[in-house]
Image (cartoon, rainbow, N blue to C red; front, top):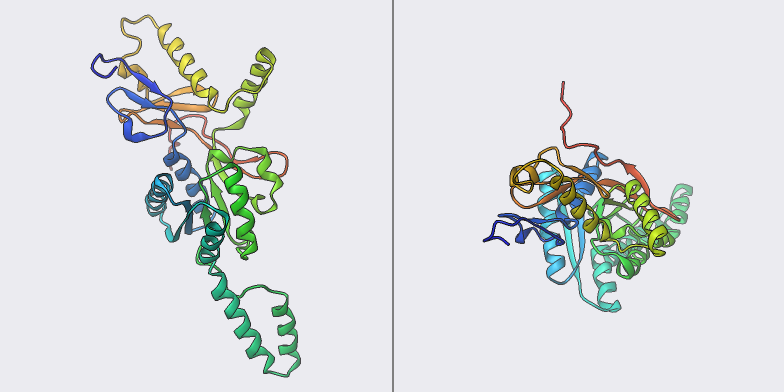
Length: 297
């Protein structure tokens, strides 16, 4: 297609293959990580950590997070990679949480307080006895880019090793768009970036009425691609798929929200931020309605 000058709407999220008429329409991890990190930064979080699978995907996600956090004015304080298997993952999470050091710090504090015999020290010791560790981890937000069974295995380990969900916000991407995640207490309140859910909900309902089943999550990409081709074909021009039309800076409205194709081959999307809750995730920061940047005063 490239030598023939035929534009390609590729169902890929790897921007390394984009450009020169190839548009990668998949849900880009760069965009999703940037969106949720930007929201976290707006809420005052500046210290981030990454917990990634020890493979090519995890390495790429760690690099993206480092670049995004630096651009947003934050700092990545810890990056941990876990290998396959329950034992290896458990040890990685234990080390990330500095669990052994924090347990030792608690024991030392209890020993010092117990040497005092005043009423204040006795009350302090009672409070320490109710704790598992002493001291906090070095991050305020933790990026977990995996979904499904994998994140459901990791999240309870974080709680087990005393990473307090009230102090550390779990962050993810659209792969968390799964109602079953709300069944895991350690996931409740976590934030993730995803396409706005309202339009897709209507698509899923119409699809189920016609075909009697729930569509695949990526079916919206195909729907938007065909809709884009149809809309451009209706225009009374000799070349409806010229790059100047495909790369319209105003973008297009799709089932997964607004999107636009740029000259690099990236497909930019308007994403929302959602919060994991029981039953269904809740939209907490809506997706933009257009790509027009609001004027500043």
